[in-house]
Image (cartoon, rainbow, N blue to C red; front, side):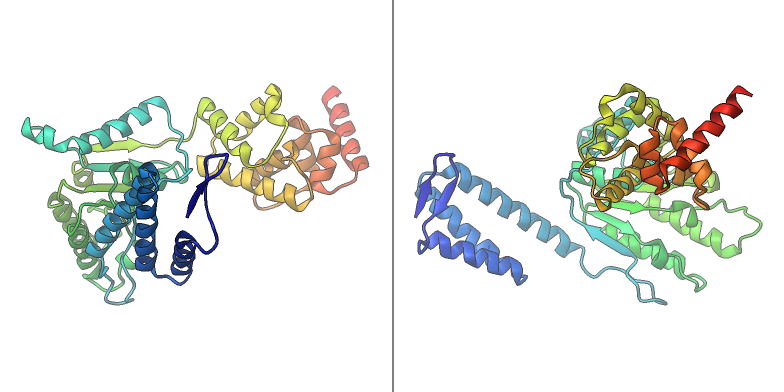
Length: 386
């Protein structure tokens, strides 16, 4: 029996039929029995209909329909291809799911990404007018600038499963097997509309006149070009590389859209800092000077690096028993990023003090005495005067 509470949430009386069905759903989820979950969820939806709550029933039915669609999609992508030598699967497959992940790009890049997705979604209308569909995207730029995240984003926006080629299994040590693996991956992706993502693309798409490479490389690149040319435009091909200069010229011509993902400018860095600083409560984001310090400190760093620095700083604060994210902890992570090989106390003290960290916080973050911090600060002032 269903009862409406004062806040509009539905509860069930113990012993009622829905109570039993909820237990069955939980049991099915915990024991890996999706069909049991679906069957009892349908019963609950029917009970909501009988009680005049068709809106909730529709939501349950919609979830079930989406699940059936995803299952059918994955069924079409079973029997993954594998490398004959290592027996490793050459692809990973994921179904698009909404997430809290945010991407930060400049306005021009966002516009071009939006145009690429819209062109795919309207490909039939474009083809009727004799315009080729835009379904190939080449991403290049420094590591950590969002290439993999963007591939996931395109998958979510188009509703297509993401088929990611595994470079460790794709490139074989056996002569000729790499080209065969590439062909199998493209054949596999051709079974169902999907987003085929080729990361570290330069490993299989290098310039064919490289004097240091064997003739096998030319065969690999030729095979890759043939497979790209035959790729169905009902799917999307995304390739990504950190070394654009290594790609063969013929490869560039195969992509309708090429997009350079650069390191964030001052505006984007401030947006990234504002977003990632939410990992813990803090007071420094309300301080314009300290916020500007972080924008300068993170210059030349990729979004993935900035995210990592905030996570590391937050972890250290929690381990230290702090309830807030400390400004000094974030600055210290920037110092470690810039000087990964050694952590010199004096240099670190100078760095933190020079970037608006108080003497007390500097001593706390570096686990040194306040007296030592003051001595370094005093010497710096004397040195500055001299």
